[in-house]
Image (cartoon, rainbow, N blue to C red; front, top):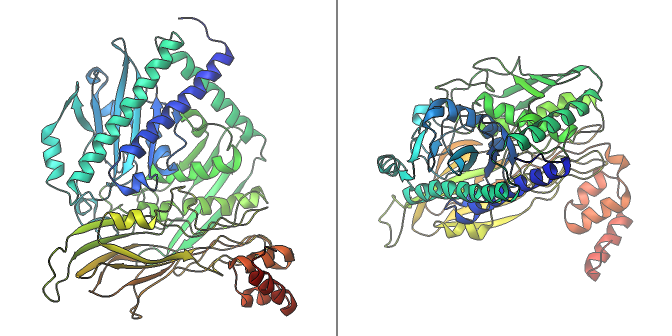
Length: 568
């Protein structure tokens, strides 16, 4: 094997990143679940023979990919080095050795070049249903949350385990979708494998050892240099959020050392009785992501660039739930971890991190069935429809927050058309929510309004997965809080922010998703930006007056521009 120059190694590094991005896009194109096709709730990566992640796809979520960074080592340990064979495919949805809950399927495939084992491809996708109680927080243990697939072979030397397929099909509500997604996961790994072998032949490589050393050594060195440039100090941060029946307190002590940063979640609330608990692997994923975004965003994500960010938490705290704790909605708590970390980091690196945002995704699942209060008309069906939505992101030190944008998960909001296409669900309204972004020198991002119903002749269970109902996002440096989440039926019947709730025939669910908080005093916001927000409908005239001191003359100017169809 020839000795590679640094330039050649850099070219191959970039090539690996493009390989795993093609792997991820293959999954998007072939997946059955709308959560993958439309929202991008997935991850893809390539690993060396010891299970160290060398590159990840740009498409995907940090919760998936950063958790998956640890997962391949579990596959190696469970399958056994001597049992890793060409044509194999391995599978699991283990929350503690995968990506945090049973609704994520991870498939790992070994890659061989001319009969020699050279590495792995892995990918993860969120699936619509895994059986049990369904996707929600209602379970009292992981045993109630659905079908558990231990780390095992999905395919043995190219032969798919039909017994496993039959067991899976017999235990889920959407068997065609789920089996289709598993085959899509295996296929996208195969796409990655083909592109890797092409690259290795082009560069005359017999193994990935040399490029792996180059990637990992340079990533670790660059990350540690970023950390070493920071002041060696520590600070504490906390965040109170809704929880299920009682509020949850997240607490972290952030300590910056010369060669690593430690997040210690001692003092955080204990386990919840319901399924909002978080395995440590998912807590690590989002704590590391938050730090990496703030400190070393330009360094590609891999095992070495993640290693200097270290996370500890007391066992059986809500952020280090042990088996058999219920964990189905681990994302509701997990997505709040970056705001908690930033509440500490803001004390050490002021004017660096954003204000608090909506945090967790504003997801809900609708279980539709024929009406039961009287005979249902012909043609009614049963269906499970999952939709991903977002509140507003927090304002940043120099910019407004993003409207209806998922931070930290990064997944996309599903189009109404895609949601309505998979079942008899009707989205009557979906639009930005004026005045929901917290006032500030930089305004918080807006949440959304949604009105959700079903086709005539059906009723449904509405599985809520929301937060920020009682504890809206808080601003920084004098910025105002974002608007809280609200949920009720269209007749005024109140609904809970979490849990499965029955909605009778003819009723709709009315949703207001939360806004991000503001950054800096509203008095410092320039008048032109306030007028522009008013013209675009982001704020009302009342807020323009009360929060930003806009005069009646200014408001008349904006109204005149609206009538003329002009910008400000």
